[in-house]
Image 1: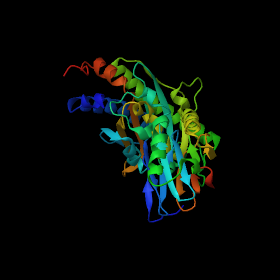
Image 2: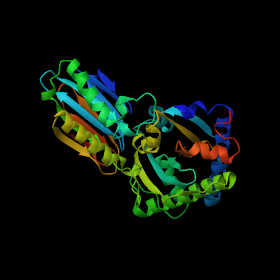
Image 3: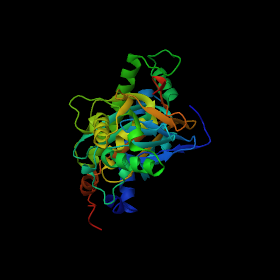
Image 4: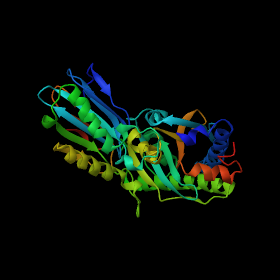
Length: 208
Length: 165
């Protein structure tokens, strides 16, 4: 894919920084929401074959709880906040408003609350990116899914499908004190967005 | 679902054929469509994991034929014929094409699942193969496998359990 051949070394580091700023603010927001420290791993920026993207969360058939946002504005893309179903449930309990329930199913109230938590996190992720790049970026209303990772994530690769068999993923993992994975942020900018992001940051794609 | 010895995985934007009691499986179909063709007489099966409706929109230099409905289906038929299948005996089944997320005022990309289904049906019509059964649409993911012994398509989902076509 032509665009990927231009994305080497330094430019991938720039995207890593983009992920770092976004997720950093989101981690702070989650930490304030739960009133406890949330750490985050160094973001990974990878160009992955479609097949391998679901492997990042445990395989195409792994059941995950996902809050999905379409990013609208100057640099469109897809933003996923992905949790294990257990992590999602314990998140709700720690908010203090929900009784623990058995099984995977979520009540309407729980779904709504998770969507709202996702909204807060995505909002801080994107607004910090928008401030940093001076590009307008806003999330759509959150959409929630509890389903196979492959089915959910393939949705974020459609725009890349027209150009090749790989997508670029900015992946940040949130961890709680004892290394318990809290959730993962995946940002998959549309192929057309890279040029805008790099130009906004003063490193145009064609300026090699 | 069976864990047969002769299990062949079909990846995303990929296609394959199998005989000799083999099984074809593809996992985590969302908006993608898993289309299967089966010749009951010589017991060979083919499966394509189609991601996009038409290669007209392709902007890649070298097209991956398995990715688009309009290019994947003819290739799948050819591969089965190479194995000795007869085009007029082929039985088509398909699953997937879900709309995983729904938004108000959603554009073309959002409707990609239903468009994949439509495009597969159009191609089948062009190829003169009738669609035997389908489990498409809705808003959930599916894992499917077809047995070349029986031609049964097994569909598994998180929300709806196991279903056979």
